[in-house]
Length: 129
Image (cartoon, rainbow, N blue to C red; front, top):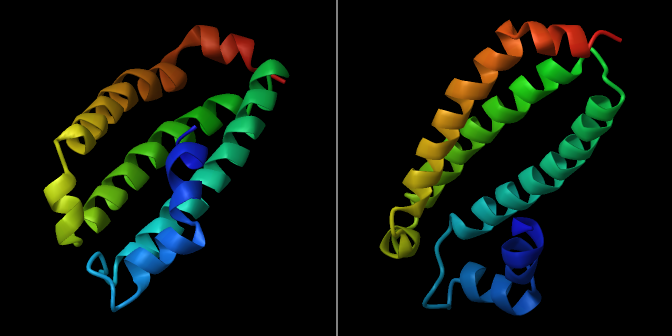
């Protein structure tokens, strides 16, 4: 959803020129790399999510490890993205605390689900193929 709602519109020629052109008031050298990073990550994560869903429905033994990777990578990329955006003054001005709340929520999610996928007997018994 985020990919199509926010990133694809920001990659239009007009928007890209607005934030990456040195003559623009909105220019910052980090905008281009941050947008490319977010777009590549979101596309790869979409593909990874579909693969993870397939392994879930097929009850493959790799599924718990994929979910641990899913949550871990989500947290790591969320932190990296936040740190990259802190390099852009305009992004810092627009930050309303929602990014930190999102990171906190992801930490809590990881704290609950990663141990569950590691220790749960039910998970171990379900995903055995």
